Each structure stands twice: as structure tokens, then as C-alpha cells.
Figure (tube, each protein chain N blue to C red):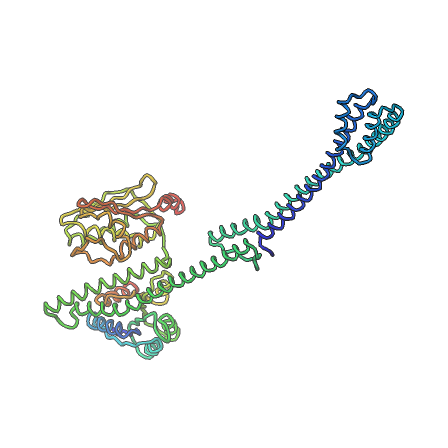
Length: 446
Length: 121
């Protein structure tokens, strides 16, 4: 297939050529038509003036003579000259004869010319109609060509592009046409294939990363279990009583082992979340119960940090959630709040239904607050606020990243409002449908 | 009380044995794969069999099923497992008298075993 530009050029050349040819022929015919009509007019004028050749004045004769040069064909001009010579000669008989012949001839000429004019008129009309037909055909052809060669393939290409945008790669044409649009199609094809192979590569890399993480975490857990077990046996005194120094060393080893285990558990959780392999096990549970369990589990930490935990009574609420995971989120926020609270501070938990009908949980502390530039950073992996080097705080830097992932997996949002020096409020939401169906569940149970 | 402990990880095995002997006052025989566990359980008399779920040669569940089908008077079996899926846990309680989830706290192991045996009795 030729290129569209060449095809358009040929089409236009053909069109312009035929139009030009037609115009030329029409012009020729029109010139002929005009000439014949002039001769006819002249013939009428001359005959009018020569109705009585004997009465012609010298002025009129001179005027008539001026026509001679323009009379066609030559024979008519000769006849005309003869009549004029007879007029000037003054021979009345000859003049009458010549005049009669001239008038007859002119009558014959008029008749023939009229016929010719009729014929020319018809022919011009014919050429006009042919031009119109050619014009219409040309436009039709152009339209057809544009539709077939440009508009349809372009439409198809843009449809395929939209499909591709929606993750459906539907390109299946075997050999694209060897024109500009075909080139565009094959370029798009290569582009799409490259994008797909890049995406596959990315996916493989991502999977490899997640697999590596989970295998590595698993391999790390096994020896840690043994270390932890040995340490707690040592601590239990089964192998004999240890002195104070040994006890101190033992508690360092135990604390750090616990931290390492927490870190590995967090990494494993996050790897699973990121690989979308952390299944939620949702079920109906009492929010009040979850709240109480979370607060109870942190009682020890709060006492150690001399922080008071406050919560308001709330009406019973049933929610459809993965209870363990939601408790993990709340515990994480609470323990953060306790760790960052000053001595004799308070940590307040507040649950309510907000304007958007979501269940919103707020954990408020009276700590130092979080600088605005850190408020997004703290939700990222392995990141802690730059100012948070706190002796009590031995976090992994993964807690909030996991909390965010878990809240989002439940369809909610998590965030923080904070004023430096006044405190921070961490909040997260649980969408309406997770608790709104509670009456349905009760009906189901009944 | 005599206990047969089947655990492939030598470290865990040592820790569990030590914990059971020193803290629980039990007499523990340790083996490190499924086939040895089955052979020991069928030839010696124990009061309790502790089976790790993941073991080379024969896994814990298989050992338990074989043991129960071949021994006229089988002793109670408790599983040790890192699995936490409900379906797996149900299998443990159906085949044995209970399970202890890994990683276990060695200072609590003897107490846990006594609690399971008490609730099964």
C-alpha cells in the first residue's frame, strides 16, 4: 500500500487534471459561441442599415465600411464590399442585384449560425453538468478515501489505546498497512509491548522482593525463637542462680531479642500487605470489647510511663472487621501516644460517628506534637519523626506504616493533626457499611 | 510422667527437653524425625507424646494417625505447630488432645501441657 500522502497527491492530480481539461474545452467552446453571436449581431445591424441602400449617406457608408474587417467568413466580406462598391458606383440596377444576393446570403448565414449557436449552447450546458458530476464524484471519492485510509484506522487506533489504558491489550492485527497510520499503529504496538514487558518485569521484581522478604524473615525467626527460648530458660533459673551482672546482661539480651522479633514480625506483615497477601479475616465483633481489650493490654506500659488512659463510655457498637488487625492498629496508636506523653500526662481515646457516617477513632496525647513536615513522613516505612529520639521509644519505624495499610485495607483513612508543644491527635475511620449492617446481622441471628 | 518429644530443630528440642525436665519434672525422650517418633511410640511406653507438626520423613499428623491405628491403647498426643489457620487447628484437636503454638514460651511449656491434659481428662 502506498503512503497516504502519495495517494492523496494522485487523487488530487487526477481531479485537478480532469477539471482543467474540462475548463479548457469549455473556454474554447465559449469563445466560439461569443464570436458567432457577434457575427450574428453584426449581420442584423448591417441588414438594418442597408434596407434602402440607395438612401445611404456618406457617413453611414464609412461606418458600414468599418465592419468589413470584422466580417467572417471571407466570402461574406467580399459580398459586403461588392454591395458597398455598388452603392458608391451609383448603378441602381447592379446595386439592387448585389443587395438582393447579399441579403439572401446573410439570411442563410443567420440561419446556419443560429443552429450552430443552439448546438454550442447545448454543448456548454453538457460540459457544465459533466463538471458538476466530476466535482461530486471527486468529493465522494475523497470522502471515501479519507474514511477508509484515515478516519477508520485512526478510530480503531484510539479505541485500542483506550483499551490499553484500561489494562486490556487488544492489539491483534497481523500486518499493519504500510502507510502513515499503519506506522503509527505499529509504533503504538511496540510501545504497548514495551510497557507490558516493563510492567511484567516490575511485577516479577516486586514478587521476588516480597518472596525474599518473607523467606528472610522466616529464616531469621527460627534462630530467634531458640535464642528467646534459651534466654527465658536462663532467666527462669533452671540452670542455677545468676549474679546481678549476669542478670543485667540477660535483660539486655532479652529486650533486644524481643525488639528484633517485633521488627521481623512487622517486616513480614508489611511484606505480606505489600504483596497483597495479607488476607483479612473479618467477622462481627463488639467495638466496646475491642476498645477495652486494647486499653487493658497497655495498662502496664501506661503505668510505667506514668500516663493516664482516659476513654468515654460509648453505646454498644458491632463492627464487621478483622478484630486482631484492628486491635493491632489501636494498640499501635495507643502505645505511640503513651511513649510520647510527658509524665503525668493523659492519653484520651474518643470514638464517634462523624458527619460522613463513618466510625472515627481519635487517640489524643499531650506530647510535644509533630512538626508539619514530619506528619506525612511518620506513616512511611522505617521512618520516624526527626525529633523523636525518645529513651522510651524503641520502635521499628514500621508501626504506623502497617497501621495505615490495615486501615486502608478496611476501607478507612488514617491521619494526624498536631500542634507543636500542645499534642497530637491520631485518627482513623471505619466505613459506614462495616457497622451499619449491624441490625441486619441481629436479624440474621434471630 | 514420661514424655516422648519429637522435634526436628535440635535447638528447640534441647530447650523443650530442658524446660520439661527442670520446670515440669517430667522424664523426656527426644527424637528428631517422624519415623523415629513412630517407632519409639510403638515400642516404648510413654504417658504423653509431643509431636512437632513439620518434621522430615513423616509429619506430625501422619505419625499420630499411624500411631493411633497401630497401637491398641494410644496415649494422648499434643501437637507443636506454627500454623494458625482455623482449619489446621481443628485438625490438631480432632487428632490429638490439643496443640501448643510455636514459638512457645519454655517457662510456660509444662504448665500449658498440664492445662491441656487437665481439660482433656
